[in-house]
Picture 1 (cartoon, rainbow, N blue to C red):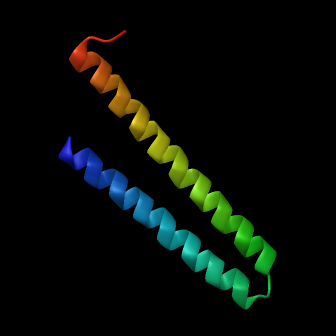
Picture 2: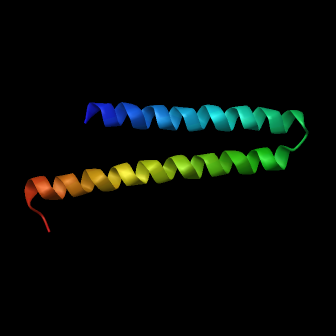
Length: 68
């Protein structure tokens, strides 16, 4: 279980680094609007990962306490 959590942390960090590098490249090319859209897409992708984790948490809580 701990290995999965570390893997997800590295995935989120990798997405953040990738998005920030592309963001800097787009800002250097004077493409400010595309850089903002790229940042927004990165935030949405990370939020999707976090929502999946929260869903797994609620499923495990329901299983532990036998709530249907």
